[in-house]
Image (cartoon, rainbow over all chains, first blue to last red; front, side):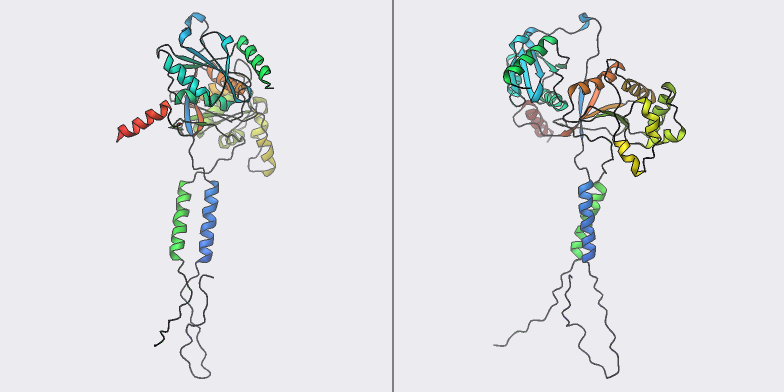
Length: 178
Length: 222
């Protein structure tokens, strides 16, 4: 295939009648099948390999405490609660009053976090993450990632309270999320 | 004008460099490849900006698939052996040595203790058993005590006593949060509060605080 027989080789000398011409064998090896095989194997290895190595993300959970006095108190001025709802919607409120609930998306929550970070004393700033039952694992990782991206030093992942859950349900109903 | 006669060349292109390159690339891929291990769970991990490499040794991995089924796996065969023999005695699984050996070679396991024996008695090489191995119901962990996963974690810690065990949680993008919380609960019941979440790498978004810090680290390092 790679070498086309042009018929020009070895036809030079003529021998007498009756003398059989010894066929000269070419020393060239046709490499084409070898290349074929090589590339076949390459494609196989490309498809089966896992190139990007997974990374690990640290997650530290607080120890469960029995007595409420042992828990850290959050200053009202520094608290910022983020709740993860259905359909990748984020709800947040500042301070400790859940009725101040506001809606955001995963794109716009970053601006809110940055705004809160700039306007608050870094000593007091605490982000509280409350995933609801409808939140996915991706949402959880995304919001934890958001903490890393914006270098929020203090954040906690806690369970959602009933009042907050009801507020989210009401907001979801108003926004038409089923 | 004398006409210059061109010598007739055979249209023969030398394939040798081509072969050289092909096999160079081939050997690169052979060396760089790590085969995807065949798992009964299919999990697409979310992205994160975390740049920490995943520890490959001394890992106890809990995988949660998109339906919330929970699977466990361990890398070290010796620890696996310890883990299964501990569970065998404490949970009265009644496993034979052949079934224990089967567990040591199994990729990841996700059945309640009651079905453990029937799962491990299957020959993993047999094609007919592939579906049964794929259709494992997951380890029950949906209560406040952590369910059966609690015992898995406890005995894994026993098998690793004295050494640091990395607790990995690998979960699918669309896994619901309660499934993840149940797993965390089982770990918490064992006083384990440090986890590593398996994610795919991603760059820090341009302009963010982390991006700025990383840029500083890069320029400061030079």
